[in-house]
Amino acid sequence: MRSKSFDGMACSIAGTLEAIGDRWAVLILRDLMLGLSKYEDLRRSSGVTHATLSARLKHLEENELISRRRYQTNPERYEYVLTRKGSDTVLLAHALLQIGDKWAVSGRQGPPVRFVDRKSGRAVKLALVDAEAGVPVKWADIVPREGPGADDLVRWRLKHFKARQSLKSKFGA
Image (cartoon, rainbow, N blue to C red; front, side):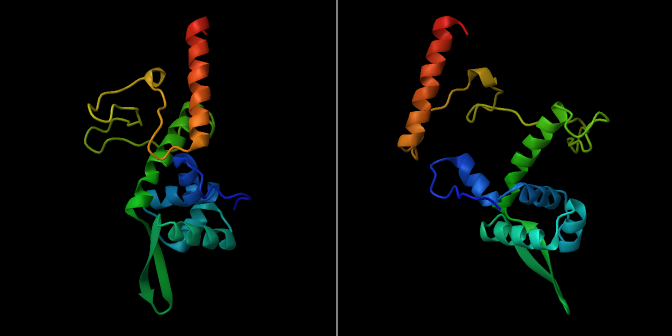
């Protein structure tokens, strides 16, 4: 899957990537989000090899993003479903979809899938909102701050961010 583990790194992004694994796992999560659950359906949808699919499913299960449920006994067959933790990966999948649609990475014909509000039928998108007030916040108004899990490397990154912002405001860049 990958050559170096992110395990132990004080970074929520690295931890999430570690739990997911790789790009094949993201596509498996996409398919689970869309309601596919059986091994052969997951393989057909992604085009992934049997060995790769088996390894990714095992990794996702070990990281508690999916669970395996038996739906047939003779022969034994299992389906895969998102856990609550795995359901949160829908945000990542939707962010990737939104970026891909914006930059037409899948072709000029337009987005292959649109997500809409069930009631209104209008398109939905991810947005940054104030966690307490629930109002939209512009990216330009967001700054990173040290959290309780910060280590020396995180503090170093934030120090560089702050210095860069200071230069920008000083020189109007």
